[in-house]
Amino acid sequence: MDKAEIIISYIRDELAADPDLQITNDISLFQDRLLDSLNLVTLIGFLEKTFNIQIKSSEVSVENLDSVTNMLTFLDKKI
Image (cartoon, rainbow, N blue to C red; front, side):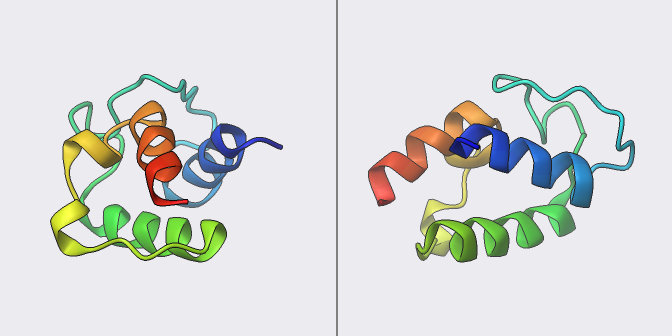
């Protein structure tokens, strides 16, 4: 599985209210209200553990975490 598939599977299986939700790389997870602030904390923990990174509070932003595409770009910078 590539990084995008890992992230999408986690969001769909662990965070989304609807496990049948179709998530694409470019869907806006927070602006479209698919995830909320509590999910964000869980998602950050997952990303840190899975990709062996640390996310600073200053890095928590729409630019970095609102879509899978944004997360992949952010992860590429962090790894």
